[in-house]
Length: 220
Image 1 (cartoon, rainbow, N blue to C red):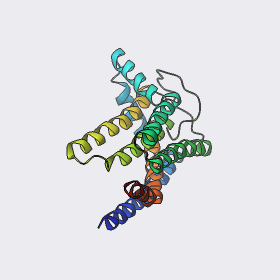
Image 2: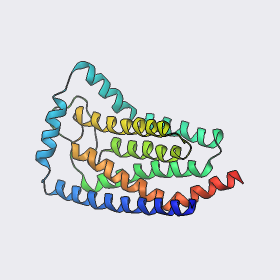
Image 3: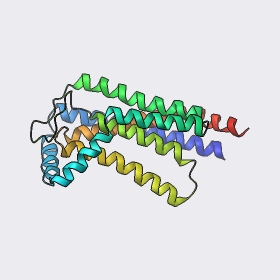
Image 4: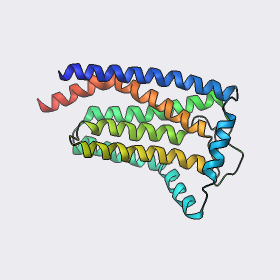
């Protein structure tokens, strides 16, 4: 029964990955053809209309959590917990694989599209290309893979709900902060989520059984 449920879950992961790939192609084409300009401008004007000194400090803090140094620190802490705290070596490898893969994939896609950042109201300055958002892409991979790995270790409905809410809030908050601060278009953030969702679910499809075998060996 467990194997049957696992196979269904992996099949669903593959279908989600395929759907995300299709959505990303549609979004990328919309950006290239400038079909999405009105959408981007409308969302930017709405989000930046919320600007207050207090909210700006909060958004800067969220954006800071998505910076390379902080992300690396979080990844290292989780790696240490997985290895020394729980002995889950395969989960550790999967976690690093997903996060590192998202970083590399973001670099490749940005070099392909070379989209310039918004030139409207910028609260902070950033360098590099805009599409897809690196903060959004890496945060989705980081907190998404963490939620996936912790899900099986949490049995209560309340615990699982809290897990999804906390991780989902971090992903959404970091992405929103990039729009608010004026360094990304909404379509950049959306593209980061979709690309990372494609990569994460593909990684789950490829590595799900391997992770389960590692857990079985620990129990044996």
